[in-house]
Image (cartoon, rainbow, N blue to C red; front, side, top):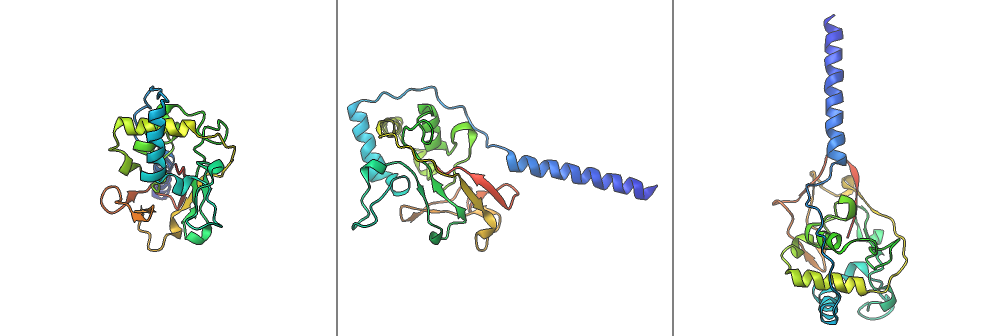
Length: 214
């Protein structure tokens, strides 16, 4: 009798634990809905956005095609914003992909609203509530002025749409040497970023999961 009771209790505990782990795996972060704003594309705003995109934020560094045969790896204009798969030789913990951020509606962000793009830049939340891999330094961009964010959005909306289907980012945490359950600060444009909440980013209880890199 007692063995049956103990067995039933054990099964209940395992079921509850499984449901809890499943929730942690699939849950989305708390988020505000994207703003309904539609950014006006004035020449001045686009010019300001180009300066921020190319010089200050270095969005080209991850999202654009470069001419590897030339000194300084200049950006190929026809491939600006088309996305990039980071080579495995860089030692990334899985497949890390900077997605296509041109206005192509099928493979880029052409179907996104301006509010969704702004939320991704400032809060690290992609369309549909996807969590952005923190190599996208949204914590650095959170304090940007409204006008500067609008300028970046206007500029990305003005880019040539490029059809370039890419896989999603897939991170395997156990490939990170010395991993202790947190993703450490990831270098961006040659500078290590400050991690969130002290020593790193909290991670749901799973050995591997998918994130979207902005």
